[in-house]
Image 1 (cartoon, rainbow, N blue to C red):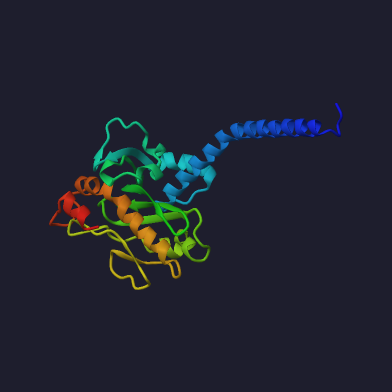
Image 2: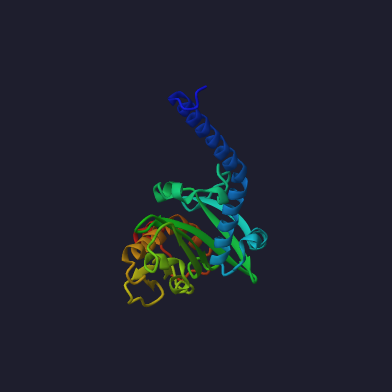
Length: 248
């Protein structure tokens, strides 16, 4: 074949494209198990971080099994007996696309220093893309003990600050309920006060609003379960589930 001909050039290009595509496919398939394992460990690491347990990614698997004692799936505030998808495998991106009463959502129940904690995954929208996180709740069902947040593309130095201690360290001690009624957590413009507010990120107003909306939306499916399960520890004047949700 004439190596200087157009047909040779086209044939050579096609062969190279096919070869490179095959090589990339083989590489992707061979690396996928390792990538999936890393994603799983990072998720476990973030769940533990909301509990106040800081471990490396390599240590996350063992530590997760040590602290997380139960994983359940809730729908309409009640445990699902035989969920189609296990709690850890549920995609929150898919879950939050549904109305709150139709969602199947995961709840992680942990024990640390003899105390029970409930860890709730949250997901919402920031300025430039999705934001997510985990909120740890004390055994009373309404006192926040820790929170961790992540983002895909928020602005460095502004909205991206939601993932730093400057923002997350405000959450421990905040209350989700008062007198038996759900209050949620408001993200304020630098004038936060009381048990139900935190300061937002300066210059990151849209991201801060996204965090507030995310928390209130994602906590809805858990309200009835947490307050009913821990009714003995919730303050007086219990409210109905409709009243709790309407107060958002």
